[in-house]
Length: 230
Ligand SMILES: NC(=O)c1ccc[n+]([C@@H]2O[C@H](COP(=O)([O-])OP(=O)(O)OC[C@H]3O[C@@H](n4cnc5c(N)ncnc54)[C@H](OP(=O)(O)O)[C@@H]3O)[C@@H](O)[C@H]2O)c1
Image (cartoon, rainbow, N blue to C red):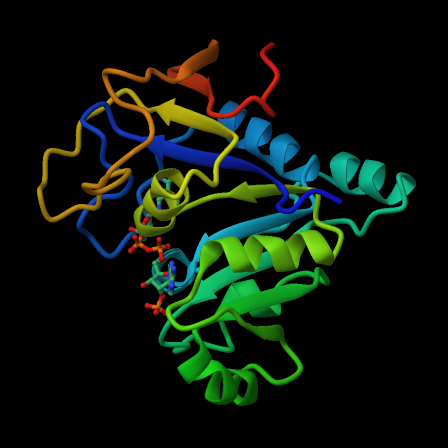
């Protein structure tokens, strides 16, 4: 087993690089065809990770929507949906969130050491809470996932998590979907904030694929040698 799973980051942005707007409602960036593609990418992974911010703000279900894809996973001896994973320092997660209540997939919460005890109590019976250090170390969480048999991990945001995985060199592939509109509001979150990214003008990422999907475009970047093109 590799020291860490293959890590695929997935994100949808507006033309001006925002991943949400500043309203209470969740902003839909992808279209139906792209959501079906994302469902298939999820179905090909052992686990899906989102940050605690996304669990709180978007309340995602993180289950495979397609009956056919769920059945195909079961035929391969896998659970219908991948394991759900999140990261938290504070541990203040709502046990009623759909992350914990929808579907039968295993759920793992990587938590910074100081909050492990109270989080394990809060999520008793709903998730496995794992001590991931102080401060929480994403590489440690990835090593733990590898030890649990996760070979392929899809990271679906938000911006804080994406920035961490990218700046720490913990990503093998990036799927960036650009929706055909602007958000234009500095209060809204962007794909990533500032940081020292391993890809810069002197070290360009490898473009693996560009695909039109209805009115959005998917750009796939290979970020490590583990990512094979095409
Ligand atoms: N367009 C898209 O594809 C897409 C996808 C997903 C999300 N989003 C958007 O992204 C926004 C949320 O992004 P976000 O940056 O606020 O949140 P986030 O990246 O989802 O989660 C950040 C939180 O995760 C926990 N965390 C992450 N790394 C950690 C570490 N190394 N150590 C300890 N804790 C860690 C912390 O939780 P605690 O606060 O619990 O300590 C932190 O506050 C929402 O607006 C959502 O709609 C967009």
